[in-house]
Structure formats: structure tokens, C-alpha cells
Image (cartoon, rainbow, N blue to C red; front, top):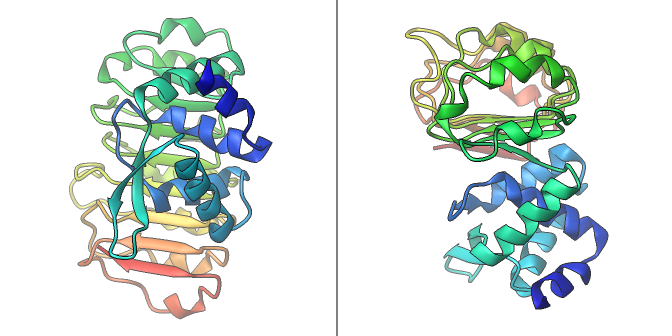
Length: 259
């Protein structure tokens, strides 16, 4: 088809960036910044500027649809057309690039080595803990709403680079501190913490963390160990969350947003 030819014509790094969009559900609004920081965390692009040029080129080639256009004419988000999504879902499955668990295709992937996991339906809650032990090579986990409850133990994902959770109960976040390879952490659910809970002090162990996004979570303050994250480039927090003393020591920080 013409669409397949358009895909085949992409440079290899842009094919990878496009296939990555198969993680997101149909008609999902994908924020540009979130996507680019995730590309960086996965090692697909080296810097934000290059990621932005890839994003714009995918728009120019009509592989993604621009939305939320700003006053300068730049897209702040995108959607994937149904036909493109069908193509990249097929290719991602064939290449074992992304594994999607939902109530349609949860059973078909249990024998595979999972590399990138997207949870798109709450009905798979009984399955995920069962297969968690065979997921030692998972590089990214994305949990969409409605989501599984509870989340499987995070400590079992030893090489995880991306953890992106929209709506899920996590009863013990202290294990996040053992995810030494984590580069991107996004927590957006209003009820992700039990009452009075906060990010654990162990988050200071994440020496490779580049992006921390807790802007959808009501927390009184970030843990003081945040200042140990010397590679932290991008920090999004709720406007009422207090920042610890020493935040100025984060010399790699390029973006600080209080939403």
C-alpha cells in the first residue's frame, strides 16, 4: 500500500520513533514533550531538539496528525490516524517492539520476551502479576486509564528505562528506588498514593533519571533526595508541591514546570 511505502521511505531512526507510537491507544492525544522525552529515555534520539525535528518531520510526511497548534503554528501534541495505527501495530507486533495487553490480545504474547509493555484495559489485572516474572527485559511500562490494580511489584523490572503511569494504585513505591536504569518517570493519577504518602527517599538512587513528572499528583513536597539526581533534565510538579532546598544543585535541569 501507499502507506507501507511511506513507512519504508523513512530513515531508520524515524521508523523506530513512529513504531513507538503504537504504545498509545486509538485516538489518544499524545503530548509532544512527553513523547520526545520518552524517545530520549529509550535512546532513540540524543537531544530534545533532534527529537522535535523528528516529530515535525513525521507531521510533514503525514504519518501523525498535528493538534493543539500554538500561536507560532507549532503542534503541541499529535494523534495517530487509524490507518497508520493499524500499520504500526502490525509492524510492532511482528518485530516484538511493543507488547499491548488489553482484553483482546492479552493471551497471545505470554510466551514472548516482553520489551515494551502497554496496559490499556483494567480487565487484564489477573494476568499481569502472573507473567511479571517473565518480564525481566522490559524497558518501558505505560499504564493507561482504566488501569490494573494493583500494579505488579516494580522491583522485578530490572532494566526498566521508562515508567509512565496514568491511573493505577501502587501500594509500595519504595521499590522505584531499585530501578537503577530508569530515565523517565511519570505519575499522573490523582489517587496513585495512599493518603498521606509521598515519593520515597529512595528516588535519590535513580542516578540516570532525566525526566520526573508528578504534575498530576497532589503531594505536599518532593523528597529532599531529589537534589541527588544530577542528570535530571526535566521536572514537572503540581503548583502546590514544595520543592526541597538545594534544587539549584540540579545543574542539568533544562525545564522546570509547575502545572
